[in-house]
Structure formats: C-alpha cells, structure tokens
Length: 184
Image (cartoon, rainbow, N blue to C red; front, top):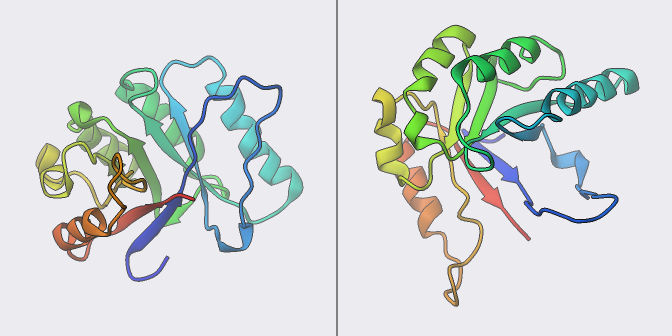
C-alpha cells in the first residue's frame, strides 16, 4: 500500500463448472478479500479451510473479509461480528494501521450497523458504497467509513473508461484511504 491507496483486484463470475481458478501475480498482493454473502451454508467451512490452508503451508499470506450485501441480502450484525471475532486475531488476517481490515460490497442501507460493529471489533472499515457516490458515502452513519472503495473498473456502455470516478474518490476522501478497483 502506498500513500493511503489500496488496490483491489476482483473478478466476479458464477461458473457452472467442476473447477474454478483465479490466476494472480502473488508477489504484488498484500491480502486477498474473502467475499462472503449472507446465509450461504458453505461460508463457515470455506472460510475455515482458507485460514487452515495458510497455517498448514506456513506462509505469510493474509485475508480480509468483504461482506457482500448484494449477493444474498443484508448481513445481521451478530453474524458479521461472529466472523470478525473468530478470525481477526489470527496471523493470517490482514491489518491496516494495526486494525483488522474489513470491507463490504454494497450495503448502504445497513451503514448504521457498522457503528456497532466497529465499536465491538475495532476494525478499520473500507466499504464499497459506490452506489451513493464518494461524498455522500462518507457521511453515511455519521461518517462510519474509515475509507472507501469503488467498483468502477469497467467502462459504461460504449464510453471509454476514464479516471473521473477515481478522481472523485481521491478528492472527496482527502487523506482517507481509497481502495481502487483494477480489472483486466
């Protein structure tokens, strides 16, 4: 991370295949986001497997949670806190400014929940509330976000992609971190 900027590489596809692979240049990655949607029965086992795999291999590899509020609806505060308290003290959990790093995909209607979650977990919170826009997202729940990220990594319709959205975030955020998206 450089000068308060955080880069997120993300590819989202639902595949009807026997195996799904992600290919990353691992030398340039600080942590992987574990994007989990509320209510999926496999969440707990898959998260546990990810953390167990890191320990069994013995590498310095880290994860952080990105709670997905769009994939299967909103998260309950107690469920978010359960995941966080279960994993944020593990060596494989990513920390930013010595705080456990947490993100979301969407979830502006539940912004107030994060006042409680942050108070109970001490997390550093960088949500994707891009549907609100950078400036308005910073004011949600009394300014609960410690930074923001955007999913504007793709062009709209036939228009070429520009740096306009990124510029709006860096301007509105000032010295707060911006996790910018990167897409091939």
